[in-house]
Length: 369
Image (tube, rainbow, N blue to C red):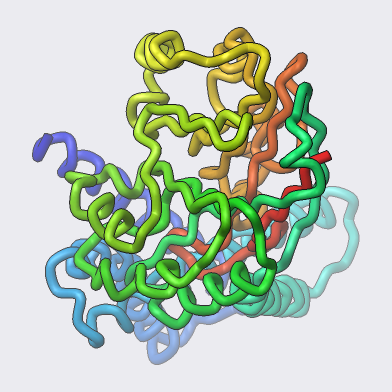
């Protein structure tokens, strides 16, 4: 595992070196920077930025003090800006080559200033957007739904990523907003934490004050399983939240199934889990599954509605195109897979860059009909 981790870090760092080199060459070329008094400091700054993310990511797991957290947030934020600067760089070259091909006179410096200016605006917008959680309302129809549930509501939240960036204040704000909605059920769909050493019980305190008459339920995400998930699950339980670990609960005629992230990623194991759960076909069933994968298995088990997250809808443009391809269009929103209804949330928090462009952070309110 240590060998694989070293290879992974080496690959990531190599990509970052290449990206920063390309950015440097574009800036120098389009802005006609030739003086060593300008290019040398630029090289140094970009080199330090290129190693900042890997360095601070490794440090934050061992030394989660204020100084390291600030350095990590700056490095993660830079990664988001780098994404848009690379888009600006690629666009600059494409437009320049196209203009040169058709013999069109083009001011390269002005072009670069406009595109890089737009990149800065996109990054700033992304930071503001990521901190502005919205409410998404939807209505769901389930077969044979008991009268008790008609008109009642559930809240689905996922991917909060409490840790180095999102702290107690963020947790308190989300919990207070959920409490004001007065839902009958609350589902927390994994990646509640972002890994690393954090004050788990302190972060969970606001969620312990959520009062939902029919319960608050939690399933694991991949970020709870980077290491031993036991300490995360214990903190969730201490907050009075029920952990559904490959099990079913029947709440007044509504079946709720929660599956573990790691187990449900393995197709054969996931199918065995659902086979082992005594699902009553005459009752409506909601499946809580962190990632929107293996939809055919859930469909074949007669599950009516699946709630997922994980994808962040790409979080930052243009990564949404990648998540759309990877998850076959089920990376965000309400969709159907044959008779299976599925809603994939874009989540609330962020991973890596504290930005969102091309999507919104959301709390999903589901009304049963």
